[in-house]
Figure 1 (cartoon, rainbow, N blue to C red):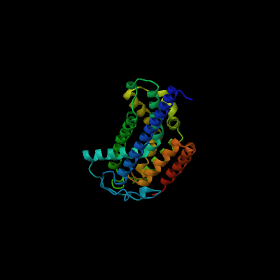
Figure 2 (figure 1 turned 60 degrees about the vertical axis):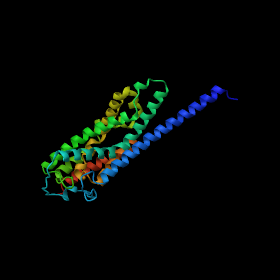
Figure 3 (figure 1 turned 120 degrees about the horizontal axis):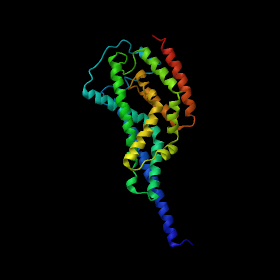
Figure 4 (figure 1 turned 90 degrees about the vertical axis):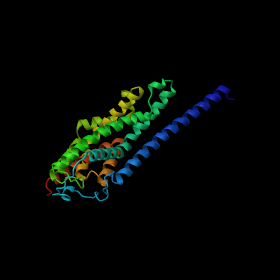
Length: 282
């Protein structure tokens, strides 16, 4: 027969495990909600007032669909903010699913650290860790918006479809994205994304500031895996749902699944061939 203290200890362990499962479930639910809201925002036009479906088309050579377009709208301060927000929320929609395993692991590590008696003021909730990712994605969104403005002004990017209207721009981005799949920097970044436990053990920092820094560092590695791929939106159209969804699925497969490394190499070869063919399509 179990003694009183043993029964209390067992009950305490069961209660603690229930709390852990509940907190992980809440974190997972929060990530799912964040992704759903981001996708809803994108699919409803991202605040631009334009139909995202009208800007979505299946085409191997998107530059042929808008060649010669000369419309260049004025970029007011409000339009700049709108474009930054559009890119930022698109990044959340595309990148959050592949970041979810690391975020959930951080939640688990955080909970067990608290249960082991570490000082509460040295720990930070998952929200601080996620904030690091959001800051990195926001920084990239600002640079992407600047690139979009520059390409529109140069006449290489359509202001209507937000896609390439130059075969040279399309070819350069496709080939660059394909070559990047084989570069050492790509695989160094990918290694950190595919081994979240190793990353957290090596780079763990206490307090909220440390959690934000940790999230930003891992977010930077994950962005390093795919920033050239994200630039492909300038080929197919920044608001082209087919391209957005394809990139989101590919990034998830490459980072999370065991076959991702081989899929990535296959996609790299395909992009190089595609880009080379694009050079000859006028």
